[in-house]
Length: 237
Image (cartoon, rainbow, N blue to C red; front, top):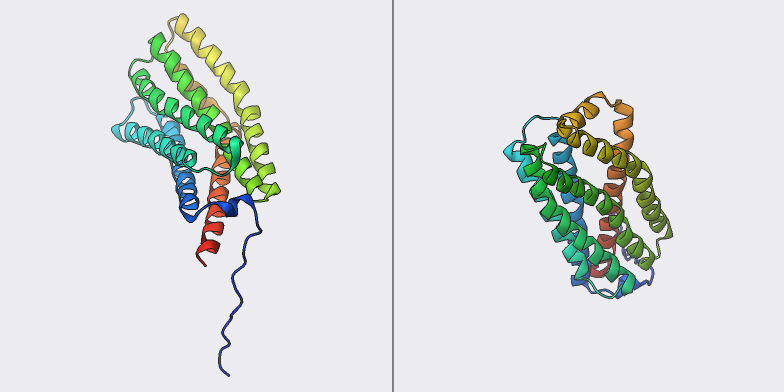
């Protein structure tokens, strides 16, 4: 019996605002989310490792810089895409500006690791960590706009929920850590030594809970990339 040839055309996404974008714009979107995903992953991994060692290794410094540069590049590519409305433009530009600040402040974080008792560098290092947390929330906003443009209410709901989870889970402990580290610096105590003490004595379950927002954001970026590639592949077919 001869094999039958399947002539069924590939599924075509419903007519949405995302379908109005050109193939080049969709390609920029997919590359932008690729850069954001890998940049965030590399930076979080390097920062986590940097909090467990006494002195920063050259590889850690390179990875932190590479992660910040990749995230800035990804956000810039998102800003180059037009046709998704003013909400998309405002959110992508906000993300781009914050990623620039994070990449810039990462230099002060590296300097602070060498001089942890310096109050000036400590303030910039804390601003760097705050920028990373803000980036987690801002990353969810373009995905929400993209999901609505593609008529994916479920993905839009996930984006809003993940951004809220990042604020609820990370903002209170970060505020407490900032307060204690500033007090330690004023009292002549090494704030990084204190931070390492907290990291070493924190329960593994609490650590996993604090890492949940990063995992959720990474999964959200990957889902957004898959959504764009789905439309791009349908366009090519």
